[in-house]
Amino acid sequence: MMIDASPLSADLLARFCAIVGDKHAVRDSDEKAPYLLEERGLYQGRSPVILRPGTTDEVAQICKLASETRTPLVPQGGNTGLVGGQIPHHGEILLSLRRLDKVREVDPSSNTMICEAGVILANAHVAAEKAERIFPLWLGSEGSCTVGGNLSTNAGGIAALSYGVARDLVLGLEVVLADGRILNGLSKLKKDNTGYDLRNLFIGAEGTLGIITAAVLKLMPKPRTVETAFVGLASPEAALKLLALSQSHAGGALTSFELIADIAVQFALKHGPGLRAPLSEAHPWYVLMEISSPRDDARTLIEGALEAAMEAGLVDDAVIAANLDQRNAFWTLREVISPAQKPEGGSIKHDISVPVAAVPDFIEEANAAVVKLIPGARPVPFGHLGDGNIHYNVSQPVGGDTADFMARWHEVNQVVFAIVLRMGGSISAEHGIGVLKRDELPDVKDKVAISLMRDIKAMLDPLGIMNPGKVL
Ligand code: FAD
Ligand code: ZN
Image (cartoon, rainbow, N blue to C red; front, side, top):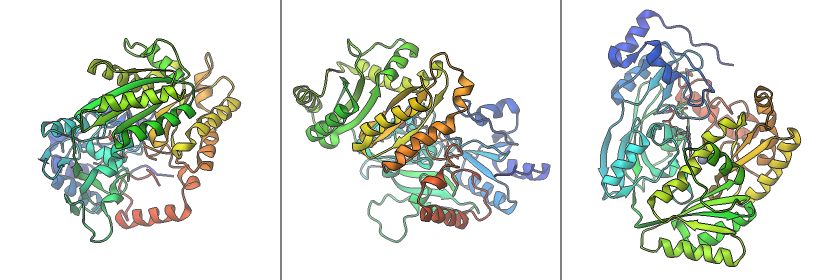
């Protein structure tokens, strides 16, 4: 168990504030409030001060002082994390990286871009676009999440199928260590075999090993043509076959392949902002797929895949977006699924992955197990089928008591995680461990891996001041 961070003396608080200047040391309760509350209201933190450094050097000075005085720090980017990792639960100092918001360089010839940690993901997209490139990491939270947060959580998103996850999109990192030393690894090299890969330690570490202050990100060429289809089908098995067929038609140009249960679409249509059903009739399952090609052939590829799927009896109905507005409407429908579960009452959430081929069995077994445990519970599975990553959420029974249902969060997790583990899957595919899944981690992770993780933590953060109580 974590104990509360000891209250800071007025003198020490003043020394921390002096590093960033009073203007950037937030101490007013109203101003602090948005940093301390997690997006969905699941976690409320507290902190004596929110430090907003403007340079890597200021971050280094903060860490040095924190280390000398054993003062715990919680790093935060856009505060969109879904596992409580960015919240100071025990009165720690909150270190907001948002003022580190410069795109230091865009180098289209090397296909790289150097972003500071606080650059909002959507702004990174704009910078890439100006150079006729893309930075292919797209998340529903891209208007507020930051590059530093994306790397610290190793974010996934809707195009990981083709472009990979955040880890795959980084060449180098600048990191401030717990003792204030700056690790300068802002390398643009693809090929550099000079020892251990330190960069990958900090990616996905959720701020427990050091503070990422800047990164060399990979850029990709802009696709010439993009086509998006909304497909109705009978089952996850049919969707899996459609995935294989589409990949054989389009190869790496198949950039997204999202599976959505009908109940998720119903929730989105009911609670979303003026959305229309893409297909004239309801189907048990849907796939939202996208092909992005460097040539002019995305239309031919998507039509070819869908025609072959129709002939094979895999697809019941399909519509290809006629224009950008329609494409955006398809994606809005997908993005609205998460917030649309809220008006339906309590929702117990899982962010799991299993081998792609196991997804249909996983959904079938999890549905049966959850409904057996809580009769009337409504599974709402949706997610990135192409990555084997399903957001397996469970809404409460209609008319049931929300508090009673939510009290069974852990029990439902246990039932679902048992199936995931049996299938060789992961209990956290995209969102990380934070505090939400910290207590489960030792039960599901290889014992040697956990022990190595603890050793690495002790080596890089011997005083335990970097985001204490998270992950481990
Ligand atoms: P924060 O929430 O501020 O922090 C997240 C973690 O990283 C914390 O542990 C924090 O301490 C640490 N951290 C932050 N910045 C730094 C830094 N510079 N150095 C060291 N540690 C740091 N996630 C996905 O993977 N895929 C999705 O598709 C997706 N969709 C989402 C949609 C919505 C609507 C929402 C609300 C969230 C979604 N998320 C998704 C989760 C979240 O947006 C991602 O985890 C995102 O990468 C977090 O970025 P952030 O800047 O908000 O980080
Ligand atoms: Zn996701």
